[in-house]
Length: 390
Image (tube, rainbow, N blue to C red; front, side, top):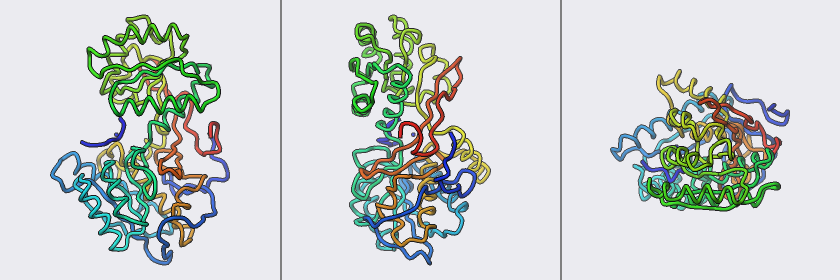
């Protein structure tokens, strides 16, 4: 789901050894001075964790608790680094997010981890001044300056899938999206990925009203356009909680089934589990974080807390562990923008990732396929940015 969230190969020798089985590490060395406060590496590093608790909303309170637990789990697995974690509740409110971010900086925070929602992240970034904010959003509209979004973006997913499709000889791609803000951004991301990928071209682009009738009225045109353009693949921006169940049923009925064209999904098709039973999605491709690393994190979290983590809790773990890995290098500029955006990136519980100068995160993703109603990884997530496609 696109997170305008409101109420989801071998390791090369250049990568430093993982701090523990699933803990994130910094890859590579030299740091240069960039935006952000200097730190005293002989003292605990003060980190502010901004979570959406305090509003009385049960879902937000549960998310806040899971984010804090994941952060503390990461802290317990750091070696040679002490973090002074201070938790601030935003109540899921942008005004309060700005206020507590300002409070955190005044109280000595050297970096801010969180908040979740895009408007909250933007407000925290303004209030934090020269302190960097590692937000749990994946909305690129709020990234930039001192705000980095840790979540996976549509653009990152589109880049990975389009590169794979082109390499597999499925590069003539028809884009199909629902007519709403999130799916329009998704379609634009796919178009940019196609334009930037050798061997890929756009076979066309169609949109539909996001409703059952909208899908019914659009499927005939979608099928006809795919056939007339000789498209190899149809790239769908909808999720399983939206139009995908209808498209997966109606497109095959209109002569555009999995045996006629390669289905590709911008959103994950493994959630809920029932989605994998849809006939139209059989043999379809989508991208997801490294399943093995995610399973390890979930097991460790469950062992520590007796419950499963929230879907985005791993971002809190990644953020804390990245901070710890950088601080462990013993440099006073460890939390500047230049250090955070080192090109080698990090390895976290969601896989390899790096922060870009534009404030977005580039994450290594696996390509999965639905085969006989089961999820099968057909191209593993890269374990470094030296891998193919990077």
